[in-house]
Image 1 (cartoon, helix red, strand yellow):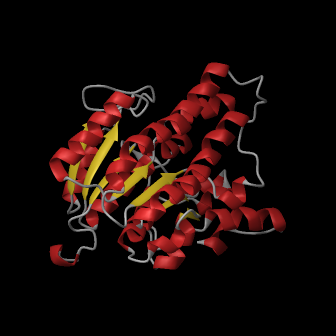
Image 2 (cartoon, helix red, strand yellow):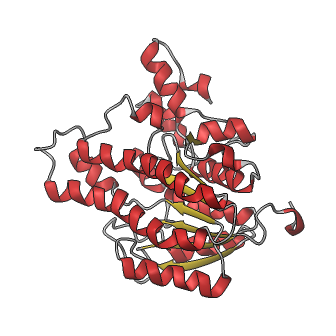
Length: 309
């Protein structure tokens, strides 16, 4: 793909929460498609967030975006601080005069989920539970409230709420504990509401979920790397449906480049669904469909992840 044929050349994107995992991959894939991508997060080369992972920084993400063929701009931002988010929006407006894509991927609460996994509301540390809601809900609301005025200035903008689970799956399954369940269902409803706010300007808002994501943190948890991740399936066969962060990144880049994306407005989408629609694959050439697999596994015995890749 030459510079002249890149579908997102000239587009300006903001990936909020792009330090690692899905956010980093989304930013890089938007850059691969030619976009200028502002990447934000709390971990920089000078400061580490509460997640405690100094090995991934927003500066590195920005460099990866540029190396992929876009332009990466790292802006340290705590999205729970309205003043910092307002300053970010003002900078984008000053430097570019527009914003075409907002990806709300702010989270950083996996360490809180692990501590409260499967616990009842009174068993979860209340401070941890409320922190999940701050990270997964309040930060998204602060960001959208500040960014939408710039986003709707030009017709056809795209706003993506990244979450865990589709509306169909989360609507019938309880997710880990009440705090996590709320934190991951809220972005689905936010995208539905924001679709109404963007529609008059020709904009589109959707929620998008990866499947079982092989983030840097997840790979470490299972003691494998991206090169030998299948070794983990010996102990946990279901890990065979997992996907690399690249998969979701390609999905959102394809969505951003689709001139007819308004047909998705207000919808809950998944990486597997987008792959079938737009014809892309994961890094290994497969098309994992995690959420369909999970439902099929519940309905019948002997269902294999290999049948859904």
